[in-house]
Image 1 (cartoon, chains in turn purple, green):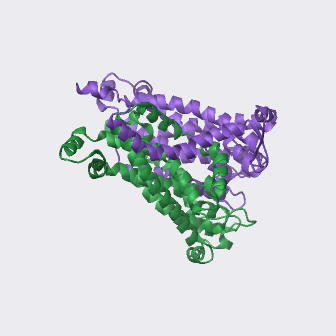
Image 2: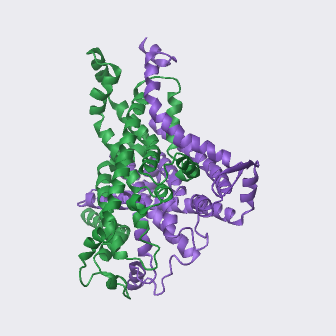
Image 3: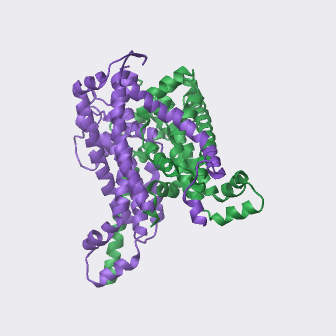
Amino acid sequence: MDTALAKKGHFWTTESKLAYLLLIPGTVFLILFMFYPIVYVFLMSLFKTNKFGKILKFCGICNFKQIFLIKDFWAVLGRSFLWTGLAVLTKTLFGIVIALLLNVEYKGRRVYRTLLILPWASSVPISVMLWQWVYNADFGLLNQTLKMLHITQHPPYWLAYPIPAFFAAIWVDIWIGIPFMSLVFLAGLQAIPKDIYESAVVDGVNQWQKFRFITLPLLKNILVIATLLSTLWTFNDFNTIYILTKGGPINTTDILITFIYKYSFNFLRFGPASAMAVITFFILLGVSIIYSRFYFKGEE
Amino acid sequence: MVEKNVGLKKAFIYFWATVIILFLLFPFFVMISTMLKDFNQVYSKPPFWIPKRIAWENFKVIWTKYPMAKYFLNSFIIASGSTILNTLLCIPAAYAVARLRFKGRHFLLYMFLVVQMFSPVIVIISLFKIMSKLHLLNTYISLILVNSVFTLAFNIWMLNGYFQSIPKEIEEAALIDGCNRVSTIYKIMIPIAMPGVVTTVIYSFIASWNEFMFALTFIKTMDKRPLTVGLYNFIGRWMVQWQYLMAASFFALIPVVVLFFLIEKQLVQGLAGGAVKG
């Protein structure tokens, strides 16, 4: 009987009345500062706007047409995917290796674990400023260290040229993301029962086979969810690029997120910027729906 | 034979763990080295690691000659304001989705999860216009409002998990003892779910303390800038006083790093969901 009652909330039972009452404040805020702005940006993408962002007149898909004609837009779109793919892949690999190193019992493991978290715990804008100084070509300690360790005698001018600047920026993003990946994978590894490995040892399986055929399949769920989450974060990483290079030299390190910001607040072209925001919205929506699917799958 | 193998394996692990940690902490070593040097040591060629003279005066200069105290205060006001607002909004909503049955509950949960992934950049154009219409540009309130909203969905999610883990019987007993539904929330549920509430409080404080983009866009005068934007404005002059910036960063990092360590485990679990519970 209890389950029959609990199965479906009828619209105006007291319980659901209370629920709606409790949900009002939070929902109102989300509607005002999240959904209404999204709707507004959709509308704006269909109108001509002046440089104060004031809507002038309806023009259909004019803003979309316009951005598709900008050569930089396609370069930026492509770079956003390259940026995301490369960074997520590197973070995942680092994460797995570090998690494996931390999953063994030894003295001082907790110290390593604590120190590992620092890049994530640190405030992102401040970390990026810090990296900007690290990358300084004349007085920065990175290039000095590269010389001291005889890695190269002619280290690049990191932030002055497009390709080094791109790699410099992507490394900062990776660096911020490594701790989360390592910790999630570590949690996943620690959940694997030890006796599974013990029976494998009896069967004479080597380390690599153990990893490939036991650990990896058992980590699959967590691997999917962590990489999806990391994909969203990486794609959305505004701070790293804006603070480190401001998208420069000449837009060569911009990704969609920073490009939208610059188009609106530096170039004051709100129409095309809204159109790009709409496109970004759909990309993010797609990935986050997949993420939610897997999240709930893990939950059940 | 086996003994030797174990020793070798340990040495291997220590070696690589140390290499990776040193590699990852590299920028922090740079920070510490730079904040202890004076201007001439910072701008010397070739650069060196160990300061020849420790410039303790840096730590004084940032508080006396630069508006560090003001930035700190601004960050503190904005972060506290958005944390309070966020908590007030998030507790009732989380309780409702965790405990009460109503139409659209599943949809709402799903939506909260999707919403937390949206980039603020998508809505910043609209929010800028909204804030300007409401005459809220260049105020603390504008940042308090947006910061509290952008952590709201995630916090409702996390707290929802905590509320759900509380056995129903406890609440039922309280109801029988004459508590009504609302008073059970703050007399029973919140005290039991305290670790979860603390996690969400700390998380939203950290998130607004670290927020950069909205502050950069909404705040135009120096006296309202939070730390992140204040420090960012150190850069961009023709010669940056890196030793001061590094010393200031060091202070700005301490509170968030300490707070972060308190919630790190819950955060990983909240983000990865059922996948880490194992």
